[in-house]
Image (cartoon, rainbow over all chains, first blue to last red; front, side, top):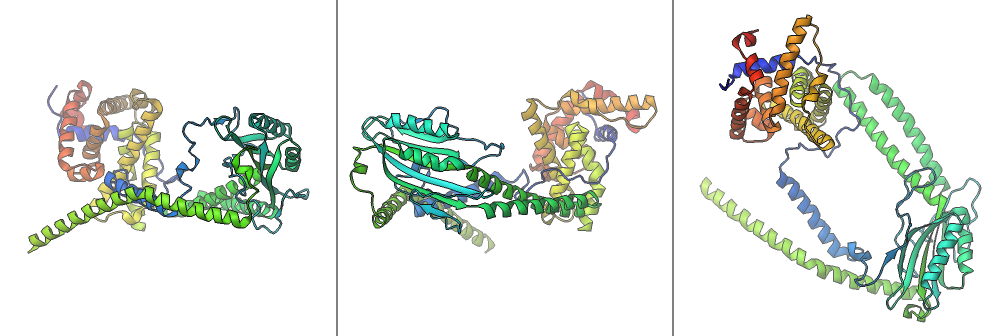
Length: 361
Length: 175
């Protein structure tokens, strides 16, 4: 019983067992998700993956050191300060049609413009300091804005509650909220989304609060043409995909199947990309975004008048210079480590090369 | 690449049945082989010529099977197990032949199922596909010595399977 099975016995048994599986049609059915161009054999050596990862990490470190600022730590809260997120604030949400929405924007620093607002450069874009954009019935306008409010001492929390009430009353919601109600500089930053049709009403109601409006910026960008163009491209690509699928059903060889499947994949990728753009446009043109900053009036940041454009530019340049230096200094440790590792590798390579040469000789 | 097309078609039955023996599920096996063949076709520029080509093909097939086994384990928390045998197809033979064939296949597959994946794959590649130990080493990305010891270990374990040993009488094998 315990005698080893001979090779012939095993071959016979496995052949018999395998023959029990009738071979299906050899025509290759293309799977729904064929491997992408980045596929590699699972047995690829781990050191190859590690080396690739190391190169990417090194590149990221160098880029981080050179560019400076904006790193992951940019939004790190100061230790000891009480930062709370508004309860029930939907940080990930969907639009009314269930489509995924864009991530809520981070708060913009007081006095700076929201990305894409006011500087969009769109032909139909209308930017004004409190001006309005009147959309046509079938138009799609993206509205964004920011307002900085100063309130009496100890009124930050109450003002935030009032703002949340206004937003909710207009059918909107708070996408992001950060409040600091204790410490030396109580403040709050809210990112709110309201239906575009009620965006101007919200701005007007915020202006009607007892808080002092330190600065305000509202911008509108007409994306009607962009939206319509995207929708037309999607329709065209869907028709093309349908034709390719018909052709795919008639292919006979693996080569034909894969060639057509490649076309289908390409078209599908374009459709997915455009669908994403369309959903973002739809979401942003259905809901306006207003960033609200609230600080106490005694705060030193408001003691001076709003800085001029030149002053802001100088401040930005100075901050960028200092931030870049700090980042370079922070990254210098990693750079030195990388240099040391590189030197060791070079040394070992050189030694190996000399040995190889000696052997050849 | 007509040559590759023809080569893939010729090896399809063996590759499919190899996947059946490893996965013990015809549907999963079909998907795995199709996936493997598509990978081979897509990366046809990397396919080596000559004798190494077959080992390379089975390396891709084995990888596809193993990744399915692993995802199945993640999904169900266990290996395929005896339940996977329920899906075995019947052959168009006399009823008594069907019973015998199914019983043999069931016993062989059950014995393979009791082997860990690291032993099962070399056994199938060696004794069903007919790859050499060197080719198996390429296919599973291990050293030939490792393959040799795994095959020895697998054969020892299979020899202890009473039901399998009963099938391995000279008369049955000759048939």
